[in-house]
Image 1 (tube, rainbow, N blue to C red):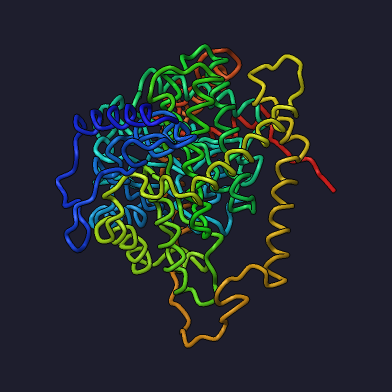
Image 2: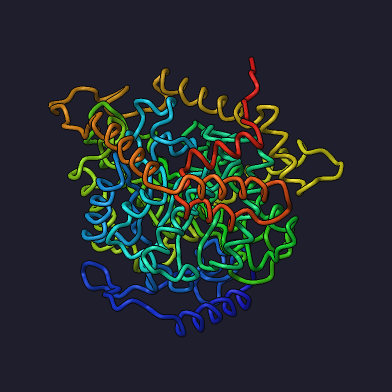
Length: 562
């Protein structure tokens, strides 16, 4: 790019920066040295390829979505939490918010993730153990008791039964007296990554896509600030993928959901801003920064050039980050504080919009109050003490970071081409990327690619080519065993007792009629969300809703592969 074009870009950025709201904060170094809000090529200098780097708040958004960077607003501290019953988790949420957390993120237990009630025989021994148990709207009310749902953004990490759980969230907000149209938050809902990596599905892909399409339509029309889809790369990376695979599979899934919206006749400029993303931040500091920067650039270009988006917000890739759970070690777990801090800093330098930092003991159990506070304070130290919020994309222009960003983008483009090729050249019911994803799921292509990457990394660890402190090097320690959080069996017994009381006290005929009406709608082309909301209002349980749909749509069984 020549010097004149660079100067014109800087002038555009300056005008947008000057007109934007900034935080009332001290934007100097620790020694009091003033720093500019962004840095670029020297005045009058040319920079070949600078159009791929650009300025913050301007296409292709490599350097961030906003001209102010974090001077406008910092990332949202959104700590992921959930354990035991709704009352216990509610107490943890109030602790997080009281200690400076900016949003909530709900972790559900395994029965809830699989669309089963706490009294289901398959739930035995799992209730409340890896997250909070939610059986009905009454649990959702207790979960957010004393927390203004209209005043806090709430993320819910659930995909298979995401839509009925979302309906319970809406009913809980209704019972608080909230204006539903003003709710803000994120629902994961990403079923593609379940088939690719996490395996918490209910039905075949097509019924899930039907529900997701209904949800996208409903939110676009009724709850415009709410993001009904958080396309998740986190679980893909945790399953063992490389950084480029995580990026490519995640964005391909996102393109699939764009195709789903377009196939429903929705306006991409209206529904695309409701898509958000969820990435892993692993321990390779510079690779992760490059991954985040490449993600924004790829998304903006594909939405504009492939899917025809014209509004700025439709081109924005907004993402939440969680530090890498798979990087935590049971050996010398205090070292995990350092790993988490480095991973969190990479996410911040990559421009994350919200962040969860893992607790040091999460490889052993759910976090204690003390370890949860350390994880929260890690973010606050980054935000308040080290000056990282002063300058937008401070590593922009680094030869190493720019080369890594280009390399990861190129690898992702190669993977996109392979996925589209899996779908063939024939007609596509939803779109070419979606066809390729579905074929890749059916053939086991994604799981095979991830398994190969995970095996290669494990081999490198076994040989000592890759190091993990406390595991295959520097293994001596004076550390003592940690006290961990243990979930009592009484939690399950109490949850089942409360569920039995709720079932006894409700109008069963109203529940049956509402669930039957929901199933009847599923046989038509109507949007299912209003009928599902009616079932939830009648206190139908999650298991009853999901079981009715299982009976209608069947259950997905992963094909055996050898």
